[in-house]
Length: 472
Ligand SMILES: Cc1ncc(COP(=O)(O)O)c(C=O)c1O
Image 1 (cartoon, helix red, strand yellow):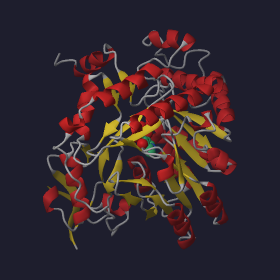
Image 2 (cartoon, rainbow, N blue to C red; image 1 turned 90 degrees about the vertical axis):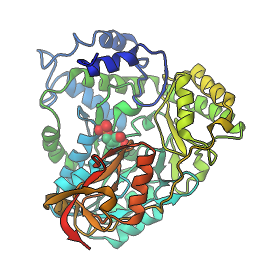
Image 3 (cartoon, protein in one colour; image 1 turned 60 degrees about the vertical axis):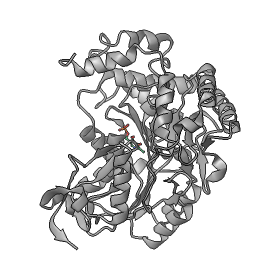
Image 4 (cartoon, rainbow, N blue to C red; image 1 turned 180 degrees about the vertical axis):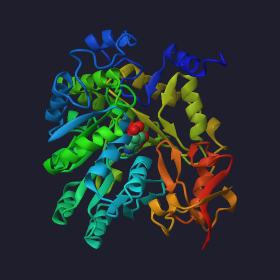
């Protein structure tokens, strides 16, 4: 057992009959049907390289070219690419293709960590837009359109803008006015749509950013479509960016791309084309179950009406619990009933659905929630103590990353400048970035996440890396 930790860890999962309300979108293989099921049932034999007739991802002129062209036609882009290194690589390609060293860019501060890594590597100077804090959820769940428009107008020298849409909670900011304003200022618009690969399936989902005119859009196929983990799409929607995107595509993708990943991405495209209506049926299932869960009078699920300037992806739930009720205890109860969720913090749970989650599974979710004695979940919540932090940027993220550093205890880090970001996973949004000053609000937020046992990147044995001897 000890000698094969990964193999044994995975074996435990594949022999379980669970409902998966988490990524990936294929839901433990249920999404692979017909020929795709035959292929993936023979997964080891299908793990090949560039055999005759199988084309080359880095120089496609055969089946991969055809598959990528079909993908581009479906999404309405100028050119689309299969990414074998997740949206992480797509975000890098987008940033490197759009900006030059030293450029000023406007970025949502709640972007995924890969965006900030791109900003560091490309040596950009970011100006951030923060979300407003939502007291009900103890989270920032939405970006203000007005704040984005203001940031564009106040920084006319910025070369582009990077936003996440939808975010982890399913909120997709209205992009029409933002893209119009950005274009007026000749800014490139990059949308990290990692969680929105399925939006083209239904008019009942938020609009695809490509259809609104974004220049580059990145989708993790694996998050919501029947595709293998790590597979993602890059859509370039601006002719003038294609040759750079071609180059950076090579830079950020393995020269030994997995045909299994590529085949699963081709299958997702096919599935979307052929079975689009399954998403409408999924939305109906989700809406029905949502109404039933709400009618219990205990749980609240984020509704589009609560969003000021965003549409909601109704195929995911952000379930908010009454105060004093522990999301951890609830998660454990769900797990005992063989229901896996995507994520929880102390107040909320996130569930991600795909067409491969059946009516029965959603009914079961409702029944389990209905049967819970909510009083038994009370008493162990770790209450939030922080104001939503906005740590001050005193060095550019690139400068700070290159400075000499020292490792110190987190508790001693007040007023120190970070050398490495601290991000909690999921969703991988950094609470503090290189070059930012540790303040009390940020420290409280980090403590809160730690107490909630959410995985931290950038903290090791309670220590973090700061810029050497730079005290303010
Ligand atoms: C908004 C966002 N962007 C990018 C990524 C990275 O995606 P991938 O895991 O496909 O590399 C994630 C992953 O969680 C994400 O949430």
